[in-house]
Image 1: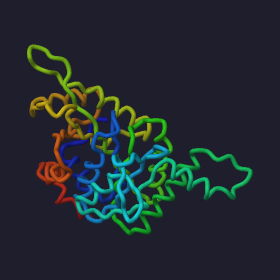
Image 2 (image 1 turned 90 degrees about the vertical axis):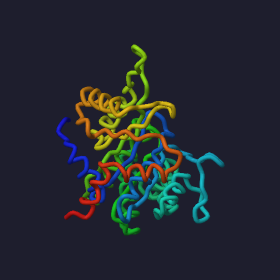
Image 3 (image 1 turned 60 degrees about the horizontal axis):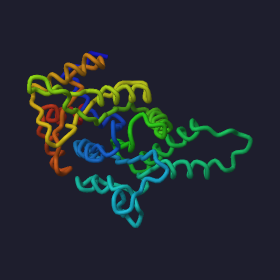
Length: 279
């Protein structure tokens, strides 16, 4: 609902260290969540980097895999390392592994019908163990796939359970597309359908609105002016009842380091420094 001011956005970003930070994407899976998660996590000290994929088998040889300490993991962990973030192979979870480990742990349970709620509870405990054992300060969790897909339901419940177990609230960060719409008198409107759909899916799955919506241009060639962005934010605010300052546009970049530098240079993100270690 409307009510978040521009200053509160700065406070939200600055207090990421006090929350569980969850990055999701829509409407496609390869939208840049790995780069976004790494760039945001690099703004705080001692982040706990976790990647969760809802699929049963996440790996595609030579495309989405990476060898870390002798184990094959998702290539997003390599992206985290590019920004100097500490990563661990055990922090790379996917649906098949979660379900397999859950069933092994539950093999001695008799006369009980196991449900996906039990799986979510197990995932919450698993994440708490990672958080406590690795002694990191701020969890950043990148959720693979597309927000709202059937496979991710037990993951969102598990993330909420994790948040409760460590007694922290969670931030939802949505990465989505802003694209060109119809052409009227040689001027293009901005199509906001992907953004609205993504927000609706988050609300349905997590029971709350996203705390921050990062907008990428649909095509590399899309030339979005500051006026376009402000108009787009006003339209989105009207359609979603979110304050327009929850929306932030990010251009396309060729490397994760460029994206990190862009975040650091933005006035919104520069506000972080005064809040990072605020009591």
